[in-house]
Amino acid sequence: MVSKSYNTLSLFDNLNQLTPYSVGFDRQFNRLNDYVKHQQQSTGFPPYNIQKVEDFKYTIELALAGFSKDDIEVEVAQGVLTVRSMKENTDDDSNVYRGISYRKFNRKFTLADDIVVNDAKLENGLLTITLEQIIPEEKKPKLIKIQ
Image 1 (spheres, helix red, strand yellow):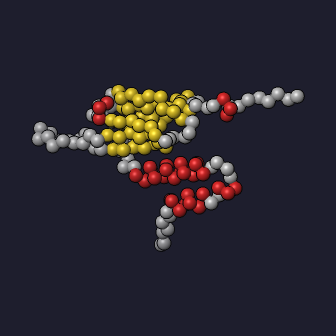
Image 2 (image 1 turned 90 degrees about the horizontal axis):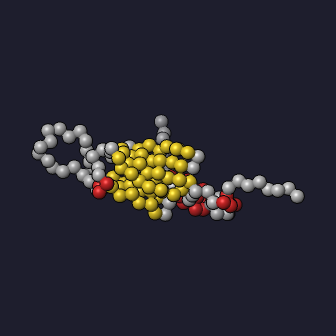
Image 3 (image 1 turned 180 degrees about the horizontal axis):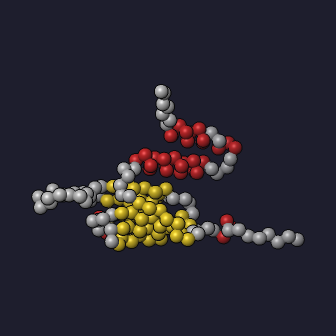
């Protein structure tokens, strides 16, 4: 049985060849490329949920039991939401068994251009980040009066 390994970067390079036939989509291809890179670098920790709360509102929930507000950084830059922590397990002889493990993590979410991060709240071991899709007036549906 022969299996093929595809290089994701070459896939997006091929998609970029379409740009002579379209205008303004090169940035979209770059964003998709960033998304693929973020997924390849992901360690799977911490577990998370993404929920659609209303038509234009979303939440991201990350399970962070044992982490405090001082242990976590939430950053938004160039369309990427990054949640990171440098907290790690410490050598503690008083632990007979360690079932809850702390580890460094760096979780990235690629955001659309019209998504803004409103706030982040850590409560009962759950970090909740609220997002909102802002639609400019010129992109909202409008009725055209027929003359």
